[in-house]
Image (cartoon, rainbow, N blue to C red; front, side, top):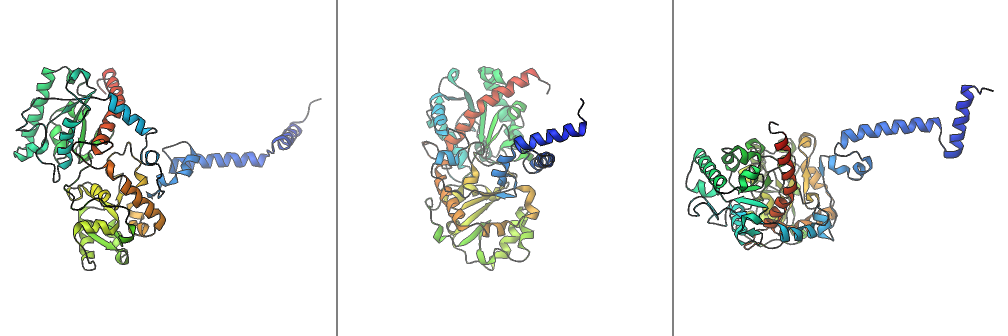
Length: 434
């Protein structure tokens, strides 16, 4: 006997409801919820297909995010790599760099003269490379090769941009004819370091240097050809510091924010119309805010502004802000950064949300940054400030270099880049016209 279709459907629904608590309404609701989840995931969490992880870490997709948690164990808190310390020790055992000896040190090559002022990071790196056990004198043992051209020294000799490019081209031609290493990979296992504003433009005289070589620079400006997936930011610093590094001293930090040399007190942080002039964070805006706050402030010397401010704005992208992040961290002032605007130092290995406040570029016009900073809970601020103090050692330059300092953080990133560089080069060989 044939059972009518409507009875079969009713029986099936009854069985599902009895066995699993499933009803047609629940099925429809599940379908609706799944569709809604997929839509929300695409809108708010395009970086992952895991909606649960998106909800857990929803701050990633918001206009700014803050993780004011106290770090008990630094490795898991500050570093993105699982087992960072173990990998670091592996790097120290296995990674070796050959420094090309060619070039007269009295002209444009090898160690810059001074470890001070705005080019200190470049000078420290050159000197550290000579002092580090990662250096090998046997090029056949090397994993990477350092091109020791100093743009700083060329600028001191008042060379024009075109003359600088000629020096670079001649140097690359010389090492490629004398050694096989450049030609083996078209420079893919080579790197170049400079803290000069013209560095990226200087390298444009050698196409393979732009396309293949890792350029470690203090000014990672995309308009000058910086390639984010290949090049690395060099943490700029203005040395010497006027005062020693600060500690966890939140009680004396009575000012809300440091902006372009002016500390804005909590009482005047939200002046009428200030926020509309603040968002774009260009030099003109900073100047306007500086003039506006001048009549209100009772400012101590420059470095004391860092020591008495809770947060320091680090807009990046200009000479006036060079070294701002290093200064903020050194003096225990929580950095406020714009990661969409410029690549943060050590961004590929360090968890910046543990010791900074990050503002997303897309939300400038709809987000009141000053008000947000004012409303951060005191407990969260204290944790951020404590974490800022703890990461000071990772941004410091030393001579000779010491474990985990800025020099070795850069070397760790270069070491990690080897696998990706090799893969990219194989793809290029397979598709030379791409």
